Image (cartoon, rainbow, N blue to C red; front, side, top):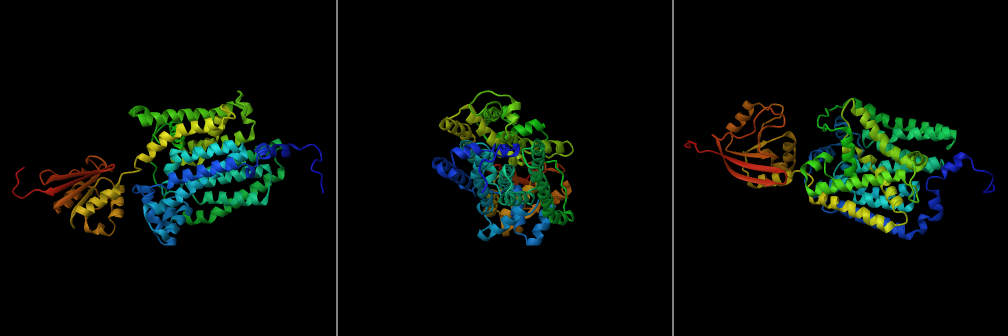
Length: 525
């Protein structure tokens, strides 16, 4: 048997011990019952927040698309998803959940489940890279993150992508410590799942190659590791190739005009705010409307960004240090790379085609939360209770404000009101195509009882609308605002006053419902 001490350590061996090894030697997870209990409690609280009243709000448009695609037969689902410019993994998972029903709560459950699993997964990543307390604090930040909670209650793929990213970078860090088959298998499975969840997920994987070559050049990993790494990347390319071939026959690259035209730095700031202190929209919007909840969330978010910066300029004892020294710490370097490299690539692509949207940055949120947790722990070393309380104080106001606000316009309630009051043959006048699709979904089998005006959003001329109204006795107008013009702006949606009189005005969250009746033939108004 070889002696455990056979001579000086090689640079690769010494560097492999830099990620979390001192913490594991002093405080193994299996013996730290308090830390495990804390993470378990945080996970339970985070799960309760994500699952509570999961079906309270109606679908928004993207969720509706996911729900409709999940109902399709298998091959039709694959073709439709490929046209929608998405890989199929999340949609196939939604299709499996239809066994338990097709309510909002059922279709949102996978997102809530993956969002909850991300909490202990981030703890493991933080513990592996830094320390157990840092990982536990990062788990608390994710449990209370307003933005992460929002997406955990959304029937879309973003929390699944975030969880897969955490696992991929966890196994990547383990591989840098020492190459083992189990770690290679874990890395390959989690990274392959990323590729089949969202095309933007490749931006999480491409940056991993740079540290491999950097550490190989420094002699911190064996040169043979670089060869094995390139072989695994080739395997991932082969794994996604069948889907790319299939999707190439039907993909329809849509226009991205819906992406807001904001300065890229403002988009990044909005994303960082969304990850943590609140969901105020753009930072400028919070300053402009001057409402207390948005202003408070903005202030808390700026403080949290400051704590993330403290991770770079403070050592583990709370003493100041230079940025160059910080970048020499491998876990900090990896964390920064995990956060900034995907965002930088999105910025670069956005120079040609708008891509950067705050929700697409959610996949990098774990790295940001780790930096915040590290900064808090280094500003207040050995004061875990204080840092925990501070994190709660900063995050809970924004979280409460987010949970208290409905997620979207309530077309479910609007459809229920119309279905209960309208008579067959009534005309429904809608302000945009998305609203019409949502109303059709919630009206269900009764949708065929009504006439839609305009009959098609491809033909929204004034003449077509007037011809539709000429046949109506009652006209229901459903709009997110006072009806003026359609989304396309090609025709006026107001009901002619000389033909109809307003007899009822109702409203549900974000939606206005007006009922017009045809004037009597002898009316001279």
